[in-house]
Image (tube, rainbow, N blue to C red):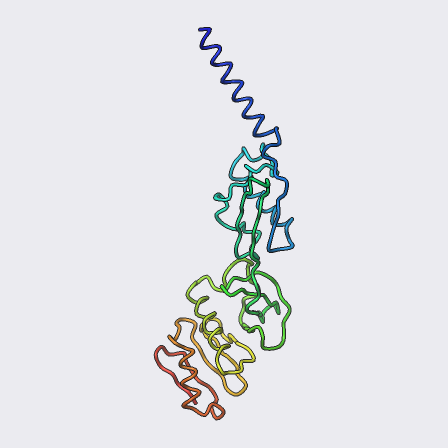
Length: 246
């Protein structure tokens, strides 16, 4: 009985010692929590801390300044409130006692304006809407003007619930902008038809968003070599495997 009491006391002392060492000794205290890739560091830290606190009650005891609070492998996705980020990675530097948060912000690749509300939005290269935007002029960033009833986008969400439609519209815009056609803007006149119109300096290009022509860039080059584009009113790609022009 005496031996058991001694072992039990030793065990309790060890547990108390470990708890004190982890929670109160300062050995695991981070000297710095650094964010690289964005100046919105406070917003990023607060969102990550909030998400991590939801996954474990122990973290509330550790505190966000404890290195053990930040398990890199448990941050598997970007918090929904940080929809303007495309990538996030957390590292623990044990030697320097630092938490390093590397992020990549989404970059404007496309301007999408909704006629029903007059609101415009920035869209990144992956088709994710991430910010409100002014209606910009010029040809550097492609612009889409959508008629219809849609009044707003949800930040952090793709242009369409149908991922294939989002992929198609992005690829059509990308290849058209990289072609010899000087595009002044893209238009969706009737959303229910799922069609996209590219207005160039001389003619219109009609596309269906239901499918994507293969090797569209090569088709553009071939048409420019065979046809006198200045005399055409439009080129129609809305029928799969068929091209019409007038």
